[in-house]
Length: 37
Image 1: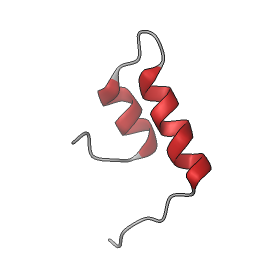
Image 2: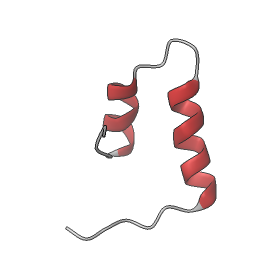
Image 3: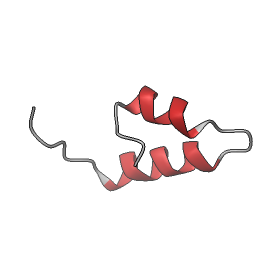
């Protein structure tokens, strides 16, 4: 599998999802298909 190219908008969406009150980082990572680290 190759590397993904994330747009600035997609990156911002992921970061904001992780910063939301009560956000579960593991769940956010699974939702977007990224590695938690």
